[in-house]
Structures are given as structure tokens and as C-alpha cells.
Image (cartoon, rainbow over all chains, first blue to last red; front, side, top):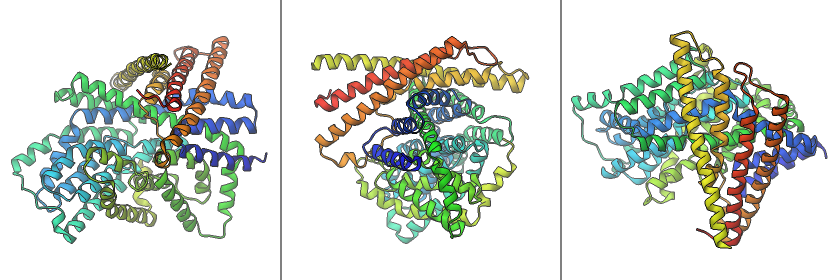
Length: 434
Length: 165
């Protein structure tokens, strides 16, 4: 069979297996193995299966994933999310919609020590939703803002999506991490502005909160200083080349552990829970990466990425329009597929075309992360929405999705800003050593 | 028959749980090793010899030994929005197909990992700095794949026989 036709059949079969609820990593490995066996030989297919799995699991560069995941899990178990929320609450709580703004600020801060959208949404949702309910915030605003702001978890470093993208495209993880800093801060500001505009438009959605004394403000801010120091230590260490990404993750996890122990907020049981949680997330991510490696080998022998990139480059369209189409494909795919699954499936196919069009790969990584952020909050898959639904069980899904739309608009504006001013993402990486 | 399935499930779950404990110990070990390597390299100009390769070995244990438990908890990412809208019978039939494909995959992986480990054992391939042999962790992957196979087998039986604990 023609390799290109077989490649297309393989992609269709893969999407069909995804839709049949086969675990994403298993499906990629299975289709990759079958396709490779057809095109090369069954013995070669069997051989790459075992070797790809071993090489992925034993890759030093991929051990960055368990370390940053562990950092987030220990931070969550140590009550850091609670202290971050208390500090944001003290600073912004007295404004109309202040608790929602505080939630966004706390999500942005927690994202600085956690690389997952669901973990950020779950950690901050547990803390902020009861508070907003107590102050009679509108359910739609309260749940929508946590679900959307939780998506900052993969934009502000560390980020599992940046790590996987970096490994698949052989880009520096350190550069990708710092590339997410400014877009993350701008997006957090856009989310806060969104809350402000919503509350100005309809003041009944969010009451004015009680003001906090200066003493209380200083107390709660003092409670998060060590977390800020940890973030700065890890990211600046990475930025200046003191640490490799894995070492940075290890330093972050060890730092979070020390903070939890020093504050006596991490007992043996919560430590064990943090380890179990980190194992589950690490395994989930790494199985997909390993599956993507096998599938990537199959794609390589079909030559589809090369043919697609040649075809795209020769299209009589400006590269910005082609990028627009790629963004649209990701947007639509993100509605139906998990962020990580979408990235691992599409990067081997689209990345050569993006390079051939002359786009900066670091900038493209940030764009991908922004689009996958939209995917985690849009129906029908929107995983963050389900996480929030699990916490706010009495709030209907439609109400949460309704609350998300204004924040989705902020995300679209952010993508537009980044397309017009790519330097926002590329400036810091140009100064980075690692 | 249900009694046998229960026993098989208990066995598969305890395998997954034990392997997960090993993965947890490896994760803590990895953290300790990286922290020690940083302190050694930055403060005493003496990084742990072969630290990178040992972290890589621990990486295999962390991930491979946690796969079975993650499958028990249904922790692997799945795209759920279509199947959950179908009638229960159709859902069970689809689950049966998906679990059986997973069983084929992990049976092949167990076999091939054993084969690969055997090749590495015979060729005497070791890591560059510490000379640690590769084959034990590759055999470890094979054992983990058998455990995942068992977990998938139980989930397959539960799906097709309508028995649910």
C-alpha cells in the first residue's frame, strides 16, 4: 500500500480509537506499531515497540516531568494553594468581583509552581469556590473564572505541555518555560480585566467584599514569600543556566517539601498522597509521550509530515493565513480532544510545516499552549469544567460553560496579541542560556 | 465463575498496588538523587558520578511500575464524550474491544521487552559511567506489562460479563 494512504488510514484509525475511549497513549502505540509493521516489517514494528518504550521511560530529559509534577503535588498538599488564595484575597477582596480577581491571581501564582491545568483548577477551586459561594457570587462567574484561570497552569512555567512540546520538537525546555512568563502574566491581567468588565456590566453578579487591615495584608503576604522565593529560584536558575530542567524540577520539588515540613503542614499521609498523585499524573503523561514516539516513527516512514510541509509551503497563500488555518484546526481539535493528546498527535504532522513557513518554534509552542488552554475549557471535552463540576456539584454544567465564554474571549484576544507582537513570547528566550 | 473473577481481580489489583509502591520509592529516590547531585555539583564541585544515568534508570521504574495502578484507577487519558452518550450495551461492547486491543498491545510489549532485555543481557550492554547493566530494568518493564495485561483482562471480563464489583 502507498505509505501516504496508509498514513492517512492510520490517522483515521487513531482518531476512531480515541473516540472509542481507548487510552490515548495505548492507541498511539498500537496504531504506530501496526502501521510501522505494515510499512517496514512486523519484526521492525515489534522491535521499535519495546525500544521506544524503554528509551522514552529512561530518557533523562523526560525526567523533568515527574520532578515538576511532584513539585506541584507537594505544593498542593502543603497548603500553598490556600496561602496564595488568602494573599490574593487580602489584596483584591474588597473590590467588586474582588474574590474572582483574587482567584485569577492565585491561579496565576499557583501556576508558577504547578504545570497542569487540572491540578491548578482543582487546587484553587477547592479553596476559592466555597468563599465565593459564602459571599453570594453568581455561580456562573465563580465557576467560570476558576475553570478559565486554572488553564494558566500550562502557560506560566512550569508546564507539562511545554515539556512535551519541547521534547517532541527538540526545543529547549528552559526557553519554552521563560517564553510563557510574559504571555501568562498578560493573560492573567486580561482575565482580571474580564472580571472587572463583567462586574461593571452587571454589579449583582458579585458583591463588594470586606476590606482587610494592613496588618492582615502584611501577615498573609508574609505567608507566601517562601513560595515566591522558590519560584524565582527555580525559574531564574533555569534562565541563567544554573540548573538543567530536571535539576530545576528537583530543586522545586525539594523546596516545596522543605516549605511543607517547615510550616508543619505536610504530614506523612499528605506526603504519601502527593507521591501517589504525582505517580498517576507522571504515568499518564509519559505513557502518552511513549505512545507518541511509536506513532511518530510510523508517521516518519509514511513521509506525511514532509509531504504536508512541502505542500503547505507551496500554497499560494500568505504564511499568516496558513497559520490561521493551523490555529483553527487546533481550536476545533481542542474541543474534542485532550490537550496533551492533541499536541502529541499533531506536532509530528504540523511542526515541519510550521518550520518551513519560517515561524519561530518557541513562539509556536506558546501559541499551541494558548490554544490548548481554550480546549480545556470549551465543550464538549473541556476537562477543567469537569474538574470544577466535581467540586461545585450543585452547579449545572451549562452554567459553568456559560461563565467561561467571557474568559474564552480574553484567550482569543491573547492569541491575537501574540500574533501581532510575537516578541512577547520570544524576547525572554533570546536571553536564556539553557 | 464470579468468585474466580473476584480472585483474579484481587490478584491483579495487589500486583498493581505493589508495583506502584516500588514506583513511589523510585520517585522519592529520584528526588533525593537529583537534590544530592545539585548540592554536590554546586557547593562542592563534585556531581554524583553517573547521576544522570541513574536518574534515567529510576525514570523507567517510576513510569513502568505505575502503569498498572494508573489503569486500575482509570487514570490514563481517554476521550469520553462520544462513548458516554451511547446505550450501556454498546458501551460494554466498545469497552470489550478496547480492552482486548490493550491486552494485545501489552502482551506484545511484555514479550518484546523480555526479548530486548535478553539481547542486552547477552551482549553485556552497560551504562557508560557506572557500568550498570540495562537488562534488569528492561525485564522490569516486561513484568509491569504482564501486570497491566492482567488488569486489562479483569476489566475486559467485567465489561463483557456485566459483572461489576
